[in-house]
Amino acid sequence: MSVVRPPFCGFTKQGTLATPATGTLSVLEWGDNSSHFTKITVDAMKLIIPGGAAALQGGKLLYTLPAGNIVVKTSYLKMLIDGVAATNDAKTPEVGIGTTTATAATATLGTTLENILEGGLCLAPDCAGTLPAVGTDTVDLVIKAADAHTIYLNIADTWAGADTGGLLATGTVILEWAYLD
Image (cartoon, rainbow, N blue to C red; front, side, top):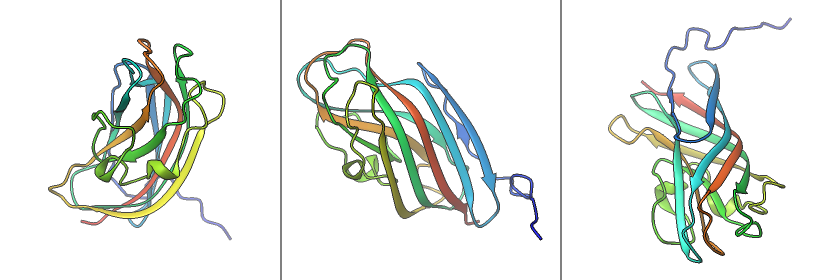
């Protein structure tokens, strides 16, 4: 006998989806008190605008977890990266998920920029929108009530040149997390 349960089964703690300046985000959530799943669908969201041939990180807010003590258990990402211009089509940037947005002039991600999904484990095969970056990570990241509850999609590389239209992300992020309070 199988039991079909509606989403959340009384689980009322849900996060907040970001509102990007470009592109769209949508969310589907399900789970219970011990495992909560958040699936974020990303469509043509601008991640970064390389200004020239230089190392640069960029990122955008996807989601904010609800207040309280939380543990992020696992993450999954399948994301196409597509430049508006062809300048950076051959680049293979790190794509990561973290609790802080990437903003530095460096070619790699680190610490809180990829503390949910490590960018070194998830490289985009190109920036032409032909093959997705795919990655999964088990993190058991404890987010205390006073910590940042923000979830960012981040990217970094040494770019081949300027792309004033920017690099767009399209794909899916799935997070498994638990509310501990």
